[in-house]
Image (cartoon, rainbow, N blue to C red; front, side, top):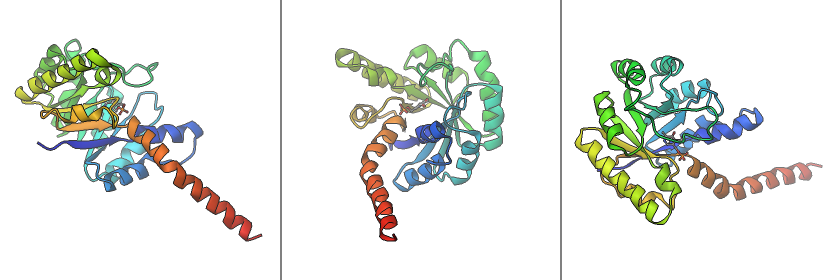
Length: 243
Ligand code: PXP
């Protein structure tokens, strides 16, 4: 089975918002990611709008050629935006304003009523719904009961762990992916994945999609900085040459 790469471009927007400039533009980054072989683009429209803005969500819908995956909390506000923009996938994630990133999976088992209020209209609109959950039997079973077509397994525990704990976290991902696939769910995974730790997750046959953001944007900064310095040096030299 093939394994899709969806690049999360949130942190291009983080850099833009840090200065209130128009650049760097996550839309431009999304185009470059797809040209380089990404199968889709993911953004997380957080309730506090700390990085991605509603404008980005709308413009990306026009620009993304592969799969467009919008991550959001299961809120009325998010639902209205998703129904207006109509991304291919909506991934429902838990959200707390004070967290630095999405720290845990959704409690699909404990919040069935609140989730169904959002899942049902999204499904009726033809949008695939994915639930971002820990690789936990109760959560996987709740995703099935709620009628979600996909889950995204939270790989944060695996990514943060070392030694025996990491091996256990990887085994839990393998078991969760197999259980979900057997139950008829499409299985994605993501969070905290890097070039170093992605290999073992990519080896899990039941996983069909990875959502990766921070590490790719971080690598892009380091890999691109020499070209950026040369470009600035060149512009300065051109200025001096006209003197
Ligand atoms: N998947 C989900 C559901 C997320 O919330 C995030 C972070 O926004 C990611 C994947 C990507 O995580 P990272 O930026 O650590 O690659």
